[in-house]
Image 1 (cartoon, protein in one colour):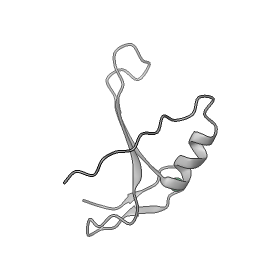
Image 2 (cartoon, rainbow, N blue to C red):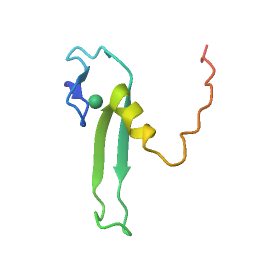
Image 3 (tube, protein in one colour):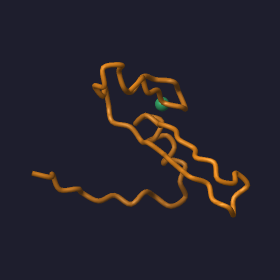
Image 4 (cartoon, rainbow, N blue to C red):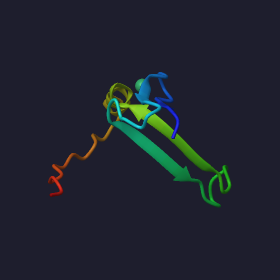
Length: 71
Ligand SMILES: [Zn+2]
């Protein structure tokens, strides 16, 4: 697996050896028939600081829930 960079700011998120430098948002969207991107699969990564900046503009805040650690 190659390097992963934040699509918004270009910051390196994942190193060549597969070790994650930080957590990030991965968006994978297969646009369907009723979109204008008929059957295109779009993938991009957003780093945490770009994510924070993005959700700051949301009219309706992100729903946050605590996730229990899987043992
Ligand atoms: Zn970024």
